[in-house]
Image 1 (cartoon, rainbow, N blue to C red):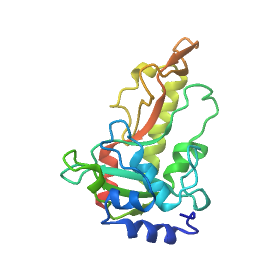
Image 2 (cartoon, rainbow, N blue to C red):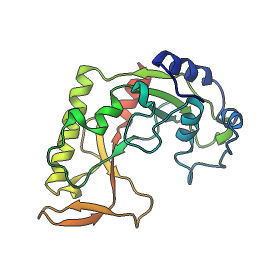
Image 3 (cartoon, rainbow, N blue to C red):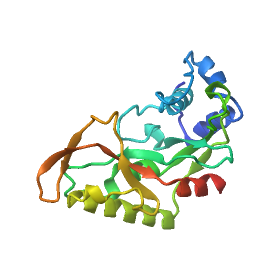
Length: 217
């Protein structure tokens, strides 16, 4: 797929996928369907990126860079509710001095988002899980203020070396959690004494309570 030239073009392409199964879309692009997603957690997102012409790859910019739109798939449980938090971006654990919300990767990725709900109940085989109606969304002023406050609190705690206090309970909409390839994965961080230490990488995630509000609007 060529990259979309406008939001309307992107939304039309995403709407055309609604009601189709993951297997149908995968066949169109000669992509193999995994038996399950335990070892292919990012497969659904990658399939949608291919089908819709995303260009960002692994770079910390919106997936549809030319039009400034991020793509987020939302796995839904059997009650059609988000079943897990949504990854936004990696969290910086060093060199946090001078970081600002206005220029953060999190803000850039959440300014404009195409949400695509996906059936994800475990009893449904991956190939026949259906794609839902897409939603093109931007945060309200209230949502933006809460996201900014969450982000600033997390960055302050990181800068002070209080990563051990970063439980998933912190943050109204935006939480910080380990984001690692495996248990041996490590990155540099700062301890509460100011020393550099090696810890599991962290990532910013949106709570399911927030994504539920978005897809239910």
